[in-house]
Image 1: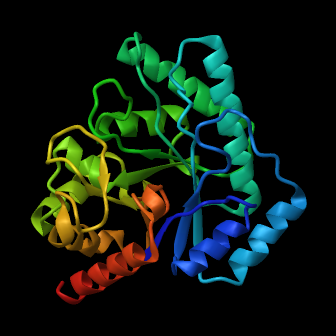
Image 2: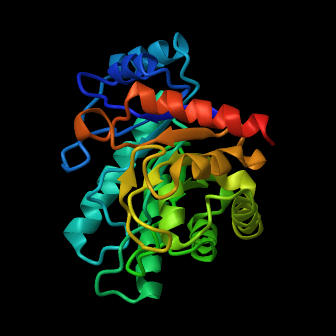
Length: 286
């Protein structure tokens, strides 16, 4: 398993690799621009080349981009749709240039729309973004179970993948905190077997591209997306071992998202080290 974390690109794309090396990441996730602003970061060919060279010389084997918080592919408002399309297209193009595994995306929020109409709008926008970029995939992330969000369950995620163009440029990311919040039992090996069997049956394991490894502040089935430091939440160290031990996850990027350094998103080195230790303990006991 490629244990890693979300890291900052502050100061330039290649700085993400420096930070990854500092906390000993095998894989990373980044924002390609400020996650709370529409204005894109304009990178040069030199920026991309410097990133690729730094990554080649590092221990980092995989990079994913996480989409900014502002977009809503299912939005009805024309201005919001244009901004969302431009932002998603920009992220995919950056992904093309740096050889990213994909762009992790939440499919969208319903607002006042019906679920059917919202899904149609999201599919149309995402297909357009894919058409405007070369090869970087979109990776749908599972939600924490809110009925106001698309991708409510794996049946709907499978429908979105099929409607958006099939498996070639579409994938799935699963988040341990979101799964726990939805009601899945990620804290036992039996629960994990049932979960992965369901993913295999409904979406297909070939579509599973990466994992978000997050503990949860709230209880199982809470529908609350509140991360806790690894081993300090409701999933706990024992539960994290069960999640990481699943054989069919091996080889995937397993990305921590925090909370981390100074209360921010970037996990500390100790959290990456702890996750790697929990994974090793879990796999030894299989």
